[in-house]
Amino acid sequence: MVLYKINGENGIGPELKKKFGVIQYPTFLMMNADLELINRWAGYSGKAQFSQKLAHEMTDLVPIKEKRVRYQEKPTTYLALSLADYHESRLEFGNALTMVKDAIQMAPEKKPELLLQVLRLHNKMLMNGKEGASIEEMGKTLNAVLADPKIKADPRTNILLRGAWLFFDKGRPKQAWALLEILESMDKTSLSEDSQETYDTGLIYQAWAKDLERFSKAPAKVAASVLKSYAGDYGPSHLKLKNGQLRYNSDEVPATNLIPMSKNMFCVEGKPIFRLEVVVDKSGNPTKLIGHYPGGHTDEMRRDKAGAVN
Image (cartoon, rainbow, N blue to C red; front, side, top):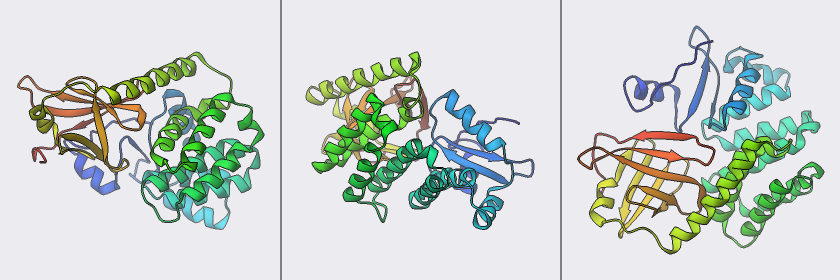
């Protein structure tokens, strides 16, 4: 097995991104020696989960097109979850949701973990305006998740879910979304025994949430000319200055206000688990964005050569 990292914005990156339909970072493509796609998935939740995912996919190295045929002929939980990852990485959340629900029917013992995945996909559908998503449907899914005994027994998961339920009930999906994003980063460990790493990350979540509240009330002062220089396209991410307010959006995140913490570091409104840094060269010209996450993970998006967007 060979691991190879490619920047989607430089060199052969744009060509490969177009060829394989990559629309979010990071996206992992698993291929055989003939460059046939075995599977693909998006997002990174740490070394342990990444290794687990690789091991899962290594058990069956047939191309994804064959997995789809085999699933039609004889569905299995493994195939359902592999196809769910494939569809989610292509932002086909409805198809991914169908696969996960099928997996629950075939493997009821995995229901607690898979219910959280159903909830996450419902949430992504709602926030991206996908057909079939509604606050009412989210409420039903949340109730089903909260009713599960194993989830009830985990205090962190329970608190986050109940907070999300209250926000949805009050018609505030953005705030609910922020809580569910925290849960998405924690759910692979929250139903098992506590670890020091999970505990430390949880403390960082709390500190970042307090920072977001503090800077929302009293943002750092940044010159309008500096904010204007930041506006532009950075691969799949975009900054735009509107009425003096710098706004961020990407293929997955709708337009959202950035709240200055310093001259080049920003909180993202409604998203306590994500911060955005603008990196500049010696002349003060922005060169890239760096997304920061509480677990220490970062992702980079280089500025397009086209220049600023007014």
